[in-house]
Amino acid sequence: MTPRRLGPLAATALAVPAAALLLSGCGDAGGLEAAGATPTAVGPRHLWPSLAPASAPADDYGAGETELVKGVTVPHGNLREVSPVAVVRAQVAAGDPDLSKESAKNLDACGDPGPKKADCPVQHGYYADLTGDGKEDLVVAIREPKSLLVVRVYMYTDRQLIQIMDDEDAVISVQLAGRSIVVRAVADLPGYEYRTSWSYDAHQRAMLPTRDEIVRTGPPKTPPAETPAPESPSPAPSASPSASPSVSPPAAPSPSTS
Image (cartoon, rainbow, N blue to C red; front, side):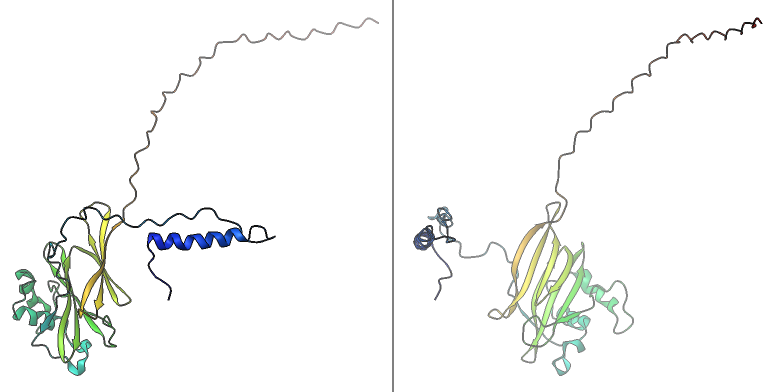
């Protein structure tokens, strides 16, 4: 079994026979040549090892939380036959604490009954198998005040509708990459953005932010080049009047004497 993680001592021990193997072929024509000394692997340094590790998170990120959605029927277990507006309305009726009062009030503009109006905060749903169980899950977005967007994912399992993701951010875009949802959001640093990749975790049975990073998006800042001041044009030299060459008239031919 090949070790997948090697410490500094193991790396050094493996480097010695490798270097001896390289040196043993130096005398052969066309053989291997030594590549030089192998640098010793340096592991991470543990800073402040005497500090006691924290036992609780600093902030509640909301990751790993699920919610049972009651009052919604899923015909034939097919989420395509479920209205995203009906799902959000059922959660509001159950006292959804995460949606603002304004968004809950604007659900009246989502139709059913009546036509759907522009003030409806619920966007049309998307469907994809994010959990890997072979069934499509439902992805819903809800517009909130202050240009925020709530992104939620629902799965249907064991005859129950379960919310497995709930994220709210100043969203730039939402992308579906394989079985992951990538949320791009505005960062508090100019020229940067946050990118969070949410993926389903079978142990937690929820979508978790498996990758969270801040990415440079703007052009690199370079100091402005110093532009030399334009030189004032030098006055054109005055043309000094030059004496025109005098041209003597040709001498008249003298009369020929016969």
